[in-house]
Length: 349
Image 1 (cartoon, one colour):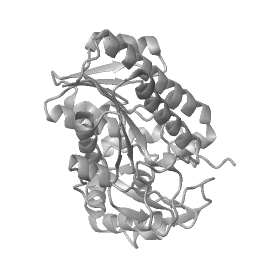
Image 2: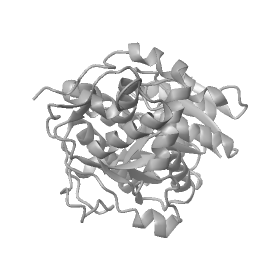
Image 3: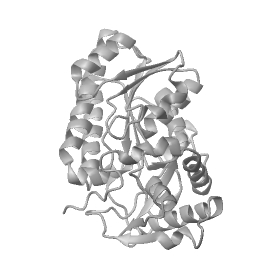
Image 4: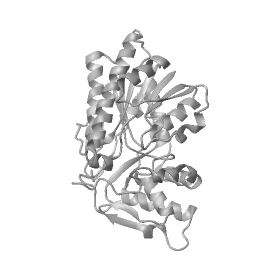
């Protein structure tokens, strides 16, 4: 199977590509190489005969058509997106242009290609989205997002992703484009760009800087190890029912404070400070505007229909992640100089 992966130089996309190549698939990586992309993420497969790279922006329809024409993929996995909530608060227009208009371009390019090839039955357009489109859950941990949860996005980022989800479903209903859609919980693991919570905490801790926690740290997230997510995405691409959506969760809920405390304990064990604990660096800061209280996924559909469950617990995954960052300073160090990294973003109200 030849898969066209958009956003393949990013965090989740690169994990998909590494796993797909390991499983014998051919991959075309289409990425614009924006600030959060890093070709080092796919360095391990760059010379592989089944791997090809195309620098193309999903906002460029002609460029997308050319990629489809050159490579004739069997299927598409669409991951390219602006994804940082704080950046979306400061600059929502980029999220509209990329996540909505870019997805429109991808759908139209894919539809044109699919029609030109005579509607091959193997073809799928797999749109990868987020659980943030469902809004916020109460923090009492008795209810969960299902595939039937009404959409209720609260940030420019989640609104742009909700819009893209609706477009994907509309292209299936209106034009018959064979789509599958997934909504995932918070990802973490190796190659996570250093503007998200877990890498920020790890790298700030190693530098002796404050570990910022928004509000009182009580916001709850379900954490999904990125390599587990990649496994689920490839499974849905191959075996998911056309027109259907699947929620992918890690079944690992933690408050932000609990998560940071676990990271600190792991660092205390793997690379102790000269004195004291890394928890001494915890600093509570002003909360993000519109900060959702809780995200949590009910994974019943993907478990019952496709037999998938996460394989990595949060404690195992955080240990793997901390160890990876300790061993790969040559990867993350240059990224600290990129625009906005290390700055508090998303404070506008």
